[in-house]
Image 1: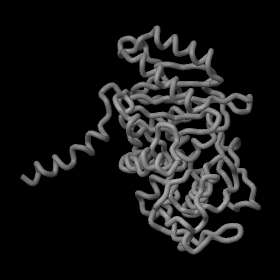
Image 2: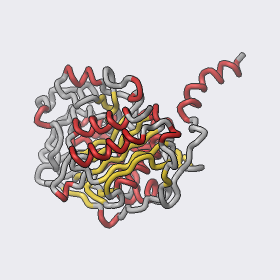
Image 3: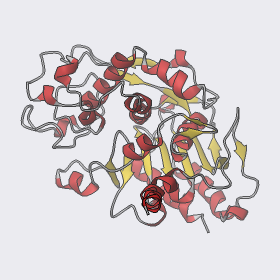
Image 4: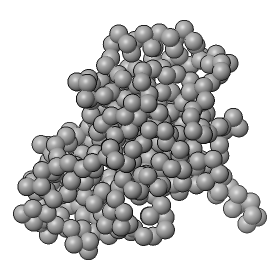
Amino acid sequence: MHKLLFIILLSPYLAFCQEPANTVYPDSSWQFATDASAAGWNKDALNNLKRFIIDSSDATGMLVIQSGKILFDYGDVKETSYLASCRKSLLSVLYGPFVANKRIDLSTTMERLQIDDVGGLLPIEKKATIRDLLTARSGVYHPASNEGDASAMAPKRGSVKPGSFWLYNNWDFNVAGYILEQQTGRTIYQLIDSILARPLQMQDWNIKEQRKTGDTTRSKYLAYHMWFSTRDMARIGYLMLRNGKWKDQQIIPADWVKLTTSIVTPYKEAVAAKTAYFHFGYGYLWWIWDAPYSNDLYEGAYSATGAYGQFITVLPKLDLVVAFKTKYEYGRQVPTDLYLKILDRLIAAKR
């Protein structure tokens, strides 16, 4: 009886971790799917999708990976460019091993870590935890060193209890990066290199290309910007789709993948607070499709998103990863609403 109960309790976890029978992993390069129609895709619709991308967007690269093989590609997928806020989702990935081995305790407060900033933090702000930073619920509305967040919508400083209110806030994300470096003794770029780039056999990653920026008169915590290619972005997405596993190695704990891509801030809560963003709820630095948009093939879907048109989207129902790139250095950009239309057209090609 006890054995049966154990199996019943364990079965949801096993279902989450189980790989499809046709799963493959790339080696030094991705393989192409030989027959999209055999996998239930309409080739004409995929061709029309490519035409739509050319005619209607400024995208510079796109890869669609199904069960470990390239289903669809567009543009220059090996060219590296600015990853924008997708960097935050990669930071979330990097936290996984150190939370699992207890080197990092997510309940640790800013006060205990001796985190302060230009002009000082308020006493209530110092009560924010690492978990609050990773879920964008710190209640710390100190200016960030870089722009590109929703800080203009922030409540008055000191008016919000940490953990109680969601706001997309670069101060949270930059300090979360600083703490990871502080607790591990390595830079974020060194961690990407050792934990992700080498085991995943990334083709275009160059640690020398990476750099931090920010205005230290506003905040001493810099933004850890990244430069990635489309095909290496796809490897990050595929690692997540495979629940942190790469071939025979568990790179990121499966329970961390599940936790970080589960909703902490529902879409309806963000709407009520007037901080909603398109179709998404929010987890641990990942955007998550939520009701009423999380139906059918979008069930369980989540995405890294970045300004100007950078996306790493995971669609578990289709065993699919979409890596989408727009090189801002060319003066190009793809708004999120257009990207969502491209995703809809992709999914419509599934017969």
